[in-house]
Length: 88
Image 1 (cartoon, one colour):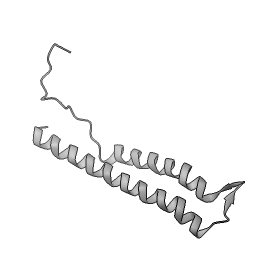
Image 2 (spheres, helix red, strand yellow; image 1 turned 180 degrees about the vertical axis):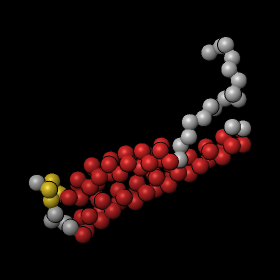
Image 3 (cartoon, helix red, strand yellow; image 1 turned 90 degrees about the horizontal axis):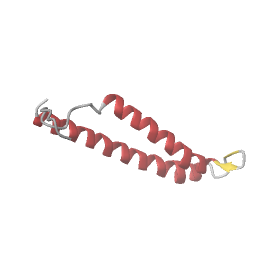
């Protein structure tokens, strides 16, 4: 893999990560404010639904998103020039 291909891959990974971040922010806004606006009295046990979605739901969304990024977008590649030296 040459340097140009490495930069292209790094840009692709950065764009996908930024897109996931924006999706995560949008989900957090909906989960907290939107869920409260739609179902203000909804609760699971004694915990309001909006609180569960805005905390645990966001964690689940983020973990799922990262797993999808790692499996589909990210690529394992050497960051150096490919030459191995005897030094650390």
